[in-house]
Length: 149
Image (cartoon, rainbow, N blue to C red; front, top):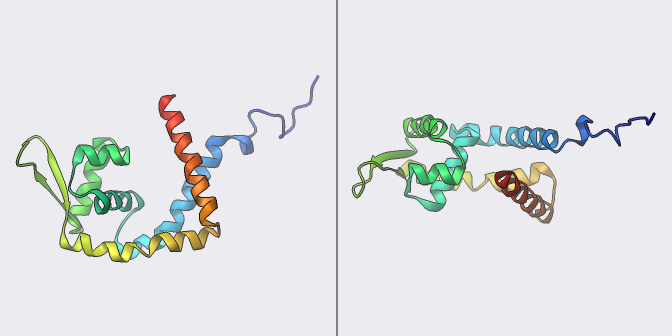
């Protein structure tokens, strides 16, 4: 009978891609918390703001597609951003069924504060930009493969 070791066990926790991704995700998001806290943002709210800073105005539907979030998750997130005074949601004048999300002046001003976050994260991770770009590429391929799934 063959002895199963950690190196050969297909079910060894340490060998699981899902485990590594889960721990990496939680760990990296935890690095963002103290940087986002002064802005009153959670990590998902920060991602929404990133999308808006880049593409504003956005329909709620398009924002959900960019963030890969369902409407049930996105709606309360947008309500909280609206309560913070960072965004406003309005009916699209050309299509009453569509809600448009735009930044408020305060939401636009927040961008200059947020520009400090990426270099702080790079510094805290202690990895080179090349390593992080390589990791980003690999994760993007993983996401695409999982979505084809």
